[in-house]
Length: 108
Image 1 (cartoon, rainbow, N blue to C red):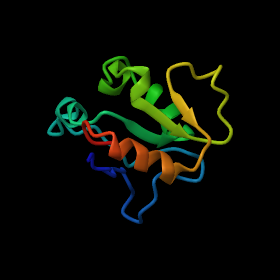
Image 2 (image 1 turned 90 degrees about the vertical axis):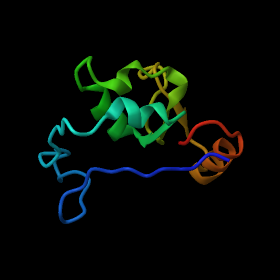
Image 3 (image 1 turned 60 degrees about the vertical axis):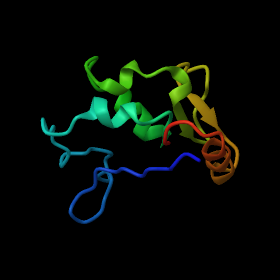
């Protein structure tokens, strides 16, 4: 069974983003090997806003090279026609995670 890994870059106060959506406390760390980290994952499960932020990064972003099936966004507002490179779900998130975990493979 696959594991569900949680990773979030938070401020010292535990915030994921400022009220305006900015993430000024996230700095690039050359010691973090994101390619190795992402190689152990089959899926990137995130919300719509996080997905949009990750897609705004430059082309060297390792996540930008992952196949469409790797991105799952939990959202009620995302129009799939506007985001062709992501699989959106509007069902119960926990049910979707349980099914993905039971399929085996790499971690989520």
